[in-house]
Image (cartoon, rainbow, N blue to C red):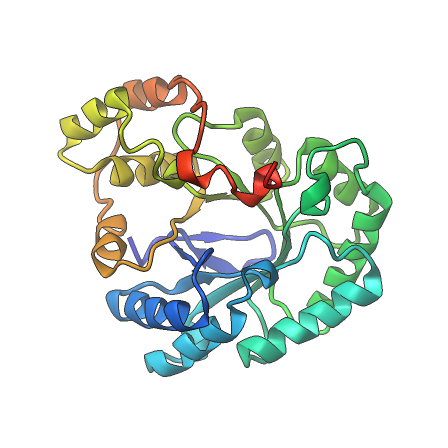
Length: 285
C-alpha cells in the first residue's frame, strides 16, 4: 500500500495512505511519526489547530529518512481569515515543523469552528485566505494547496476567484457517511478528495452489517473501511499512535466487489460518534 500514490493537478505525487495525528501532543506524535515511518508510511498529516507541528517535525528528523521522501500536510486554522494572518501562520508552521517547505497546505475550515455550517459563509474572507496560499505556493513555501471541509459552493467560490485552483479537498468520508455529490464534484474539477476519519472515529467498528462484509474478505472492519474509501479514489489518513494498527491499516491488498461497494454506500448513517462527538466539525456543540 505504501507504494500507491495519486497525482495532484500540478503533478505532485501524494501517497494514498497517510497517518493522521489529531489529538496527539508533541511527545506522542514524535514517537508515532517515527514508528509510522519505520513501518513504511511516507505521508504525515498535521494542522495548526492540532498544536503538534513541532512534534511532527521532530519525529521526521529523528526517523532517519530524508525530508524529501516524506509528504507533509498541514492546515491553516479555521479561525485565520485574513491574508496577513494566513501568510504569517504559514511561516509559523514552517518554523514549528523545522522545514523549508510543506508539501500540502490546506484551509482547515471555510468558517471558524464556532460558526461551522452557520449562516455566515465567509466567502470573501476565504478568497483572501486563498490568495495567501497562492502566494506561498508561488514562493515555494508549499508544494501544493487545497481545502478542507469545503462544501460545493465553498469550493465554487474559490474556483471562480482563484489564479491557482485547489488541488485537494479533505473531507469527512467513511462507510455510513459518503458525501457522493461533493466527491464527484471535486473529482470532476480535478480536485483530489482526501478522507479524514475514514473509520468514522471507530464508531463504525461495531456495525453488524459492515462486520459481516469484512468477514467475507477475511479482513478487519477498519481495513474494509480504508479499502472502501481508496476504491472511491480517495486518499485516506487514519489516525493512530498504535504500531499494530499502523501495520494493519496498510494491509489493504484486496478488492471489494462492486456489489459490496454498493452495499457499503447504502449503510445507514451513524446517529452518533460516541465519545468523539466533541469532534471539531460539530464545533463542540
